[in-house]
Image (tube, rainbow, N blue to C red; front, side, top):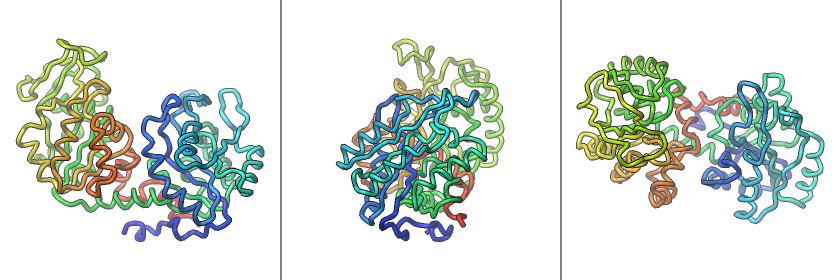
Length: 431
């Protein structure tokens, strides 16, 4: 098992009795104050139950959204990115009481650090007056994504709250104070979700074959390195989304509205690289062109067969892969013969262009023997929205696994090891 090979410290080996345990989770499920899918919360409950059963006292922390403006550095503290809905959900589901500490907000700078006001909540926690503390959104603190000095100071302050740190936030792979720097200051362990995600990553590193990978996205630049790796590792690779549009523009000279020149330039490099593996790229043959981004409006969208379009053809917005693509025998054969499928893909522009994603997921499900690994984020949410019955079945089906973080999976694939994720490396390298 990969966890033994990389010497990952495991939660089940920690002495928790009487200890205060700071747990980093990826409960980033709130959008404008509403939880649309609690999956990322639910899959951490095993870790929380274990800590509680072994006599530990729980302090939770997560990031929510992107409240920090990358250009100005200003931090917007508002209900839109509060952890309060998460606390409400946990309290209603587990019948336990959490408290969120209040800190002083500095104009446009967020919270400068942990303040002593948290101490009375920790006393209440140790005395059993409350069942848990949930810290405010980690990205409300300047030190979470700050410079090295700010990050180390914030990590040191976080460490002062607890005896043990547990990282159960596989999806939060960025090297921030609450995911990486803190492991320098506290004995640190991987939670059960983190362990499960790494175990399922192993299946991608040593895939059952034929191995089919489906990746979609809005930009080539964020995924080209992982696409190159997947092209080498997988038996077949399928693209979707705006990324597929850039690929088609690069290969066939189409001019598609909304696809930037920089993305096409990157796609040209990928096309050149893919030429070394001519049998691996599976091009979905039908696309949907729309005259507008305002919705799927009758008379303003149409289906094209790619092979019928001349080089240099100018198209309006290409907003989906047509469902006819998955009726093609050559495409169906790839999916039906697969032994493992990895999917990090929403094929069309949500919420109106859904047929490509539905056809993809239904075609994959027709293969009852294959292992299906789904990336998190939008891939998971759209599966639940479009095919709720399949989603519910997939959660409990051993042939399916839904990762909590698609970006984390692609990063780990790109790096070729779980140790390519800085939070995992920090757990293994702690002194």
